Image (cartoon, rainbow, N blue to C red; front, side):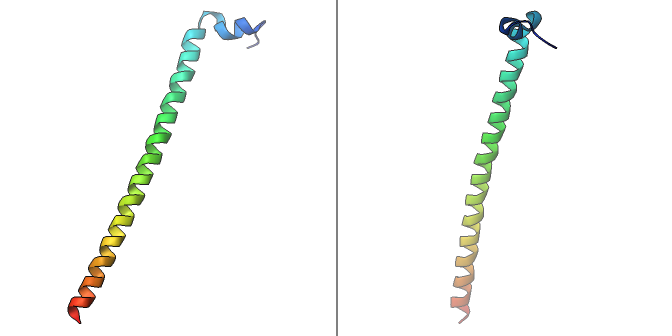
Length: 67
């Protein structure tokens, strides 16, 4: 669809508000999903490291007790 002017492009035949609002909301939702994914990944990474450290401490304690 070709537009005669930039104003026509912005208004999109009277539907501009809905079009631009949907673009904006889609961008916000995608950004929030990306942010939530990044924080969840960091949390899982931290929990995994804590679990590995705990397992190493337990293994070390079991070796010292069995000796």
